[in-house]
Length: 84
Image 1 (cartoon, rainbow, N blue to C red):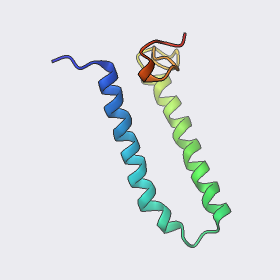
Image 2: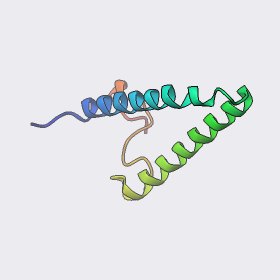
Image 3: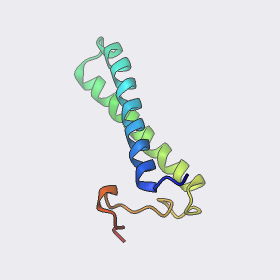
Image 4: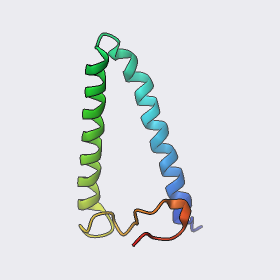
């Protein structure tokens, strides 16, 4: 059975969002001892590490062969057309 890429992308996006939410609900209460500025700083650092790691994994293992976004477009998935 062949599943359309949009369906796979939608499920992957939902799964990633659910995972991030679960991690946030688990870890943010542990930061109660921190000031709001420190908590915000560490959240930004974590987001930055995630973005850089994602870019590295995509550039090394993506379908595009090191060309960046693995042939995907920057257009939202619901538009159905690439932005390039």
